Image (cartoon, rainbow, N blue to C red; front, side, top):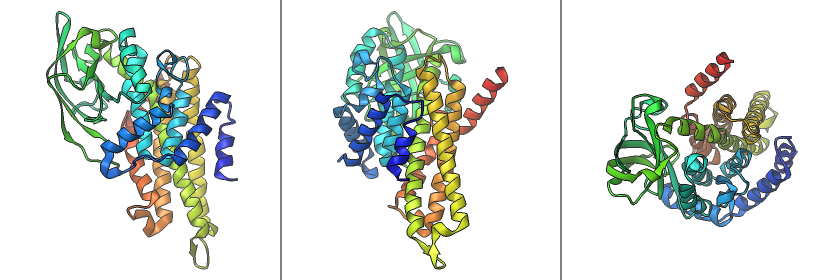
Length: 388
């Protein structure tokens, strides 16, 4: 069965409608011929270029509700997952650019006032506004409730002081969705704000270099004054807003991992059919076949978990915390195993810089950490299961 036929077969699953199938096929054709800067050494420029290109081709419309230029009346998680799977197969930078347009503006789309939505979301959809999701701090990554960045209100203005780190799109974003403490310790004391990059007192610190480069850095807030109208939702709802936003987008992380894993399997299958060892193709060896079987099964299991979670959310489930955690945890761990097996089967070529499987091995690693590490997903799944 060819790669194209396998993709078409997956799209016949009952999770999808004809609009999903058309979107996926059109995006697959577009990304295969897209001529966009894709250079790890120029991550900022590459990210901006992909945002402009994706926006110009109307694919960023999947990131916002229909009233503000979106593809569907509300954000459709299956479309987001199909997009990330497809883009990640071809380019980690394209996937990153698309993902951050959704996650970065997600809190505004889900909880923002009518004015905030009208101001930012149309520009997110056409690629004229690059957003960022500023949640993590040096001492508060997975433990969101312990955030220390503070927002103090006086009359109709908040003054924000603190620091955020590991923030994707740091330095290139036009809009930062920032979570800060407005009240008591713990989750009930957090609020969310939409902050323009040009606001006085805001600055971007030293860039953070990672094994799979993309715009990442530290944000500094030194008496940044923000009108109360820029608050997202009610005061004290920041934790709920952050968790609900991640609830929507967490499944898409698994979808990106799925795209990486599919590419790793395709590259490996082509390699083992032509690489000869001991007078026969590597594919004829039983241990190779066992590895291929494991990779293929991990991929299909991941896809089923991802699109189950996305389907449930799109069909009215208020929260899909358990389903999304399962999808994210399993798919990212499975993709890690798949890319590792790919490197092993490529042998010396697998660890050579410039080889596709070497890049995939680096690209997939961070997915097991961001938007909730694998260990956190296991805790979420266990708690949700024990509470039923």
